[in-house]
Image 1 (cartoon, rainbow, N blue to C red):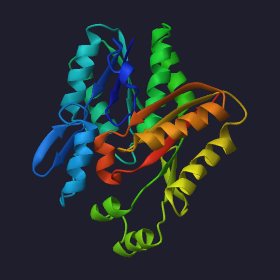
Image 2: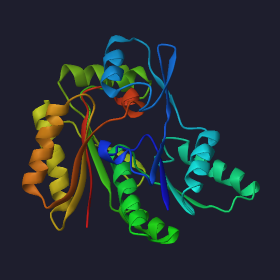
Image 3: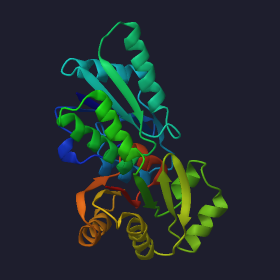
Image 4: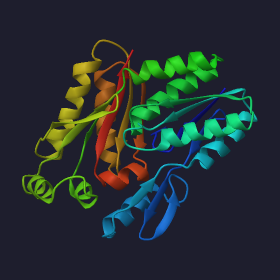
Amino acid sequence: MAVVADSAASIPTECLDHPQLSIVPMRLTLDGRSYLDGKDLSTAEFYRLQRSSNVVPSTAAPSPADFRQAFIAASEVAEAVICITVSSRYSSSSDAANSAVEEMSREHRDTDIHVVDSQTAGGGEGLVVLEALRAAEAGLSLNEVDKSAWAVIKRVRLVAMLDTLHYLWKGGRVPRLAMAGASLLRIKPIFGLRLGEAEGLARPRTRRRAMGRLLEYVGGDAAAGPVHACVMHADCPDDAEGIRAKLEETFDCRELYISELTPVLGAHIGPGMVGIAWWSE
């Protein structure tokens, strides 16, 4: 059994070399140069370039050919493949993966491949991938691995604090007036993502208050059982470590890791973001 995922998933560094896991990079263009996400450009270098550039980065999902190449490589060592993608509401990654499966079917390849839309991103997608990887390691069938992934998709939540709306404004996603008002009032917007639906949750002032609110959201949902969590950050590791320590102190964390937000997501959000993705058993 092999697990394939796109690079929008926030996965612990130590898992990236797992023999049953393959990551298909998304694409990023900045200042006229194209990069493969997670391969050609470090996160630290990306955020440095983003801060100094007036050009809005553009991003693109992997192509069907990219997924096909990953599926063929996986089929050489596994009889079945499960592919986890970022939410189809925000990317064409899932469509590209399904197109690759259809093309391989026409070629009469006998590898069973399931494409699963994670309905989330970043750490949320990463937690789905890790559960699928555990099921694959346990030797479960493709249908059982698929079921394990969906069990997490139904439970996983993500909340994140944006340091600024500047980058969303530059990308045309929020009005200039909203960006300017948030900056003037030191507002750090918090949004949530669950089952593909993004929503604004709160508009606290100051980073300290906003990070406290993030922990409150987890507390309201995760008190009943063991927690699996990922702390994401966009070039602010100290804040992420502080939140990780609070989570470890407060909850029964069966899985807890910190991950830098991949540049293909940071392109739209900008540096300074801190977020938590989690699900409870």
